[in-house]
Image (cartoon, rainbow, N blue to C red; front, side, top):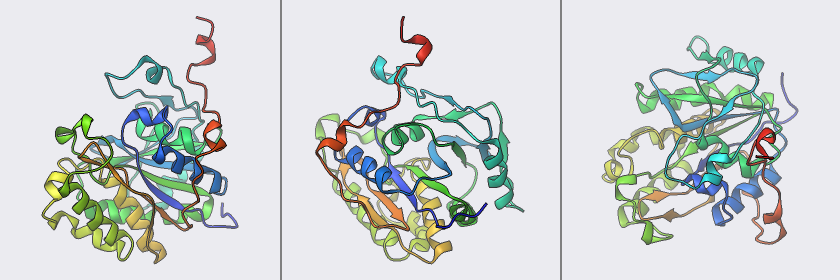
Length: 287
């Protein structure tokens, strides 16, 4: 099914799960993006938090909401994002990457916080089908760049593809008291990646050679979603544009990128009053 337009694509630095409930510079930018986007037929999210030893896509009609964290307020555990899934679009995704293989996951996963913490702001009505694509932890960076490029035809079919992770994600070095801003090595690596994504996204394949890579990416799962956007950029022959930038708590980067549209203007006024989806399932509201 082709659409009369090509959907944009994005990478979003999702940061703390608390961004689901908070209004800050980053979540304002996500809300602005949601208002500016054409309404997608479906959303496909490559989330850092589905990191397994295979490539699979959620294929259930109603994916469950996964609260894959601990130590946060009860309000966050009560939060629900009741978006539908789409077995039919899951099959399209599997077909579009052939002869590569994408398995259909009918019951093991759902929507984790890498997905719903962001979509709660982009599409607060939770009325657009959402699917997740796993990150194959056994494959090198080049595999993910290529798979991202193979997903490009989905943009012509109205699918909004978004990677959700962080360019820099080193929880072992986090300083909660640091506030907004990043350590020197965080800022250097974030700026290096920005230079690549805005000039030659295909060169992201050599990013592991950067001297700050090991500090910035001690484990790959939060960085790899960016490779999918870089692959989509290469397939389109275009570069990405940052739409929100910055570091936080010293060792996290919140920088996010867009492909196929100009970054939207961000308002700090009444836009923040838009409603989020129900945080408690209807059957629990009277208890």
